[in-house]
Image 1 (cartoon, rainbow, N blue to C red):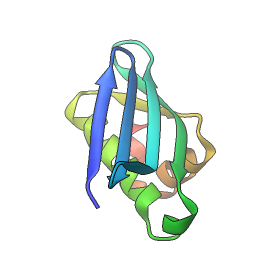
Image 2 (spheres, helix red, strand yellow):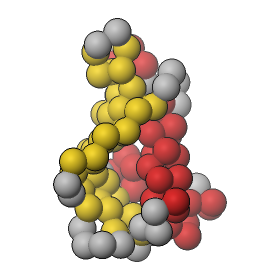
Image 3 (cartoon, rainbow, N blue to C red):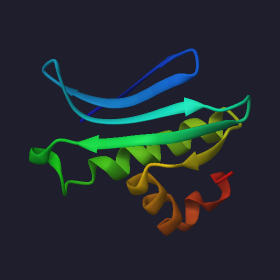
Image 4 (tube, helix red, strand yellow):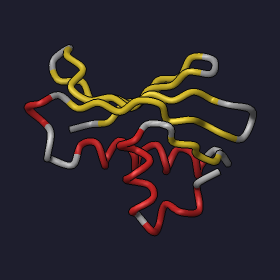
Amino acid sequence: MTIEHEEKKEKGLFFVDDNGERVAELAYLRSGNDEMNINHTEVTLKLRGEGIGQDLVAATVNFARKNGLKIIATCPYSKEVIEKTPEFQDILA
């Protein structure tokens, strides 16, 4: 599955689209010039347990690194993934 990204002003979304249906998404808000806050992650029931949520978090971390951003995760799922993944620790605000 391909993870897509869209950003409009301070709001952004990483998502997976399956024939016109969003089956997974991670939403964030830019907070200042150098931070982003992950505030929502959701995966449809039929895809849960397949690692899609972790893939969304990883895509967000890669985006943050490429753009010189730090991450604040108020979404409990994303926060847990980032805190449990040693290679993501450097990206936390």
